[in-house]
Length: 78
Image 1 (cartoon, rainbow, N blue to C red):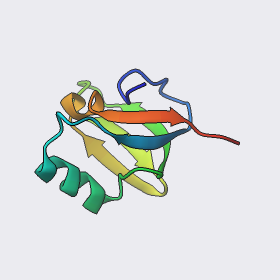
Image 2 (cartoon, rainbow, N blue to C red; image 1 turned 120 degrees about the horizontal axis):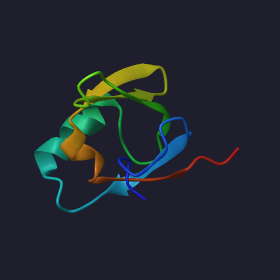
Image 3 (tube, one colour; image 1 turned 30 degrees about the horizontal axis):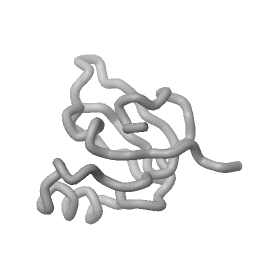
Image 4 (tube, rainbow, N blue to C red; image 1 turned 45 degrees about the horizontal axis):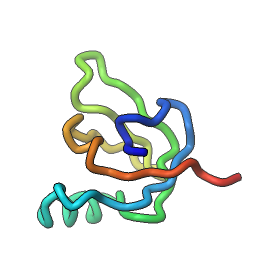
């Protein structure tokens, strides 16, 4: 599933990125701490719906909604 399909309050793990995401975007997200294997604790919509706030570990990131469909995630295992 992708990050935009995931439930807002479900803990997730980043599984990877789709090829449609460019190298620059992938490097930027990796630099922010969003890379395969990292836990996504929570997604939070903003009042306007774009960007979407994403709690990754202890960091709160604001991601463009268009990027969410390019990030593959899996449910976190307890």
